[in-house]
Amino acid sequence: MNALAVAEEVEPLFRARNLGYSYPSGLRAVSDVDLDIRPGEVVSVVGPSGCGKSTLLSLVADLAQPTHGTITWNEELLPVTGRGQRLSMVFQRDTVFPWRTVSKNLQFGMENRGVPKAEREARVDELLRLGKLEGFAKSYPGALSGGMRRRLALLIGLSVDPGVLLLDEPFSALDEPTRIELLVDVLRLVYEAKVSVLLVTHDLGEAISVSDRVIVMTKRPGSIRKVVPIGFGHDRDLRTIRETPEYSELYSELWHELWSEIGS
Amino acid sequence: MATPHITDAAPELGSATSSVATTAVGQVPATPSEQQAVRAIARRKAKRTLVVRAIQLGIVVILILGWQFLPGVPGIQGPFPWLNTFFISSPTMVAQQLGYLTTGAQGATQIWGPFAQTILTALAGTLSAMIVGTVAGIAVSNWRMLADITRPFLVVVNAVPKVAVIPIIILIVHEAVFAAIVTSFISVFFLAFYNATEGASSVPREMIQNAELLGATKVRVMLRVRSPYAIGWTLAALPNAIAFGLTATVTAEIILGGSGLGYQMLLALNNSNSSLLLAIVLIVAIVGVALVLGATALRRVILPWWESSQAN
Figure (cartoon, rainbow over the protein chains, first blue to last red):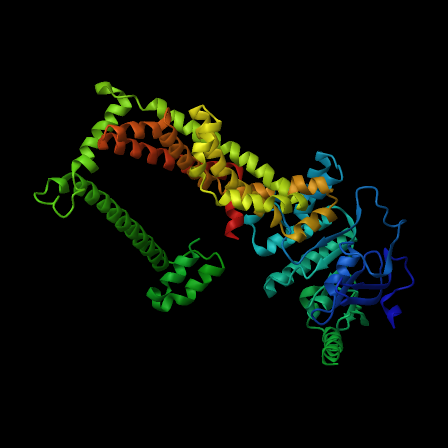
């Protein structure tokens, strides 16, 4: 049942209940999803293509309004005032501003929140160091490689100290070695920032590698078919994890769930 | 940098192929034979460039020699009546006129006045049109209602050849210089306007959503996201726009008379002085090339990000 997606013991950052979304045409994209995200938790959503994974992210990001159910944010843990904000998102498509330098791109969110210049620049230095982009502060994004641009997009997401970082297949356009390298960095950044992550991906390996829980969705209208806990903890080593028997078992389990869903 | 050269050179290296791969991946210094291959490719490239330049130069020389000497070939005016110095002048005569024009010798009008006049007119028309067109384009793309209302009018006005409007402009604006500015303004305005609306409305939806998630208000999205995007598109068209503006200016000057290089062309035409006419055409061509090169350089200064983002 749905309650499987909900962990009871820690206060969640937000609670989604009976979440559903229908297009104006009446086509139902998402149906009856219950989802909680706890602080520091990484949750992945996998499912057949067109199952409403991205729509689910849009609902959480308030880019689309749910036609059923509610999302309640934890005002105590995530007040909307202060430097941080509730969420930020890394889109599948490149959203980095080509007319702003790397440094200016990283400052955009802080500018919007009225953070003083000195503080912004200090934060930019820190982000560049964390994201291994030192020396590129004054470069324009056009001069960066695909992997570096994705890393920049991620750092922009982190620049506003979000409670939850939404990732919509952010690495799907990268080749395998670049993706693994980036995932290692992402996990490090995410764990250090203690940010919660909701990742939509079509890559089961990616989902297992980074997540604490993987949610398998049903075909459209997408609802939760199964929630698979991933017990690797936050000191996992992405480079070796893939060779462990646990990884293979989890992969088989998810693969089986996904294929039963597609075949049903 | 040297990687593609090395790949090119691989067939020549024979058994050295495996060490080539090492050079491309790890920074192992190139072996003498590899360095030799790289140099050979560089030499071939330089040689090719040299051949291209030599052929180009040859074409220019042949054209000039033909222009100079073909009218003197006995009987050539039978099949080609236009091969006559009366119509096409000759390089030496044009050069002589250029000398007179630039120095004011032999009682010729010094060209510098009309020269500056035409450049300033074209720049005034083009730049004001770029600014007004961009602002209007951004405004229209931000208000759907305004876009829907104005669209049919804009399509009609844009389809009318701007030169056809010049007589009406002179009726309304009696001053020739101002009329020429208005003409080039109208020609360039639509180019700028279309580029700006196109640019502002083609901002990826996700880019705007991301800006909003990063805390940008509606006004900020317009100023900080839509506008730079639209300005990028408009300024990218600056070299084209300036060429448009110059064409419109010179055309207006020819039709209106009174000032500028166009007016000087009209005078030369009225005197059937083809040498003078061609000398002025040459000056207009130089002005055109200079303005386009200037606009390209300006774009690089204002939009340092544009070229690298186009490459991606």
